[in-house]
Length: 145
Image (cartoon, rainbow, N blue to C red):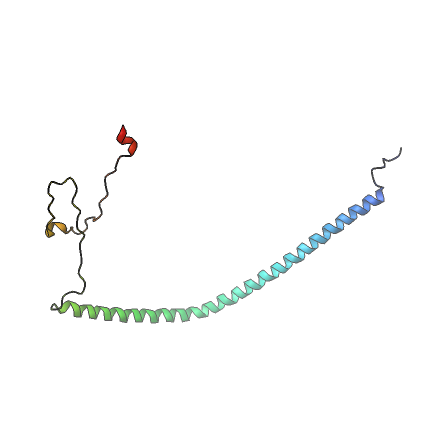
């Protein structure tokens, strides 16, 4: 009973398996070292963020102070605007600087009168839609049928 010639002897098989095992352990060791380095970087980042959040607590008082100053400025501006608008409302001699223009309705083509609409009819009531929706038009296929 002899072994077939295609199989290598057992010491060679054992050495190949040991070689594969050593390559696998080397790869795993390198990956473990990379993970440890990444973990150390993440821990350093967490420590920096903790330091920033601790200083943010001190900075929140500064931020609140800035917000209060801003509110005071806005209040002063609103008071000035209210005073200026009161001056414009009390003096009725000066005409307004801006004139509100109303949209002119477009006469429908089926109307019997072709004359231009009078200015009283041209003005729209408050809240009326100046752009009414158009009626749905049939498609070309529906016109033939």
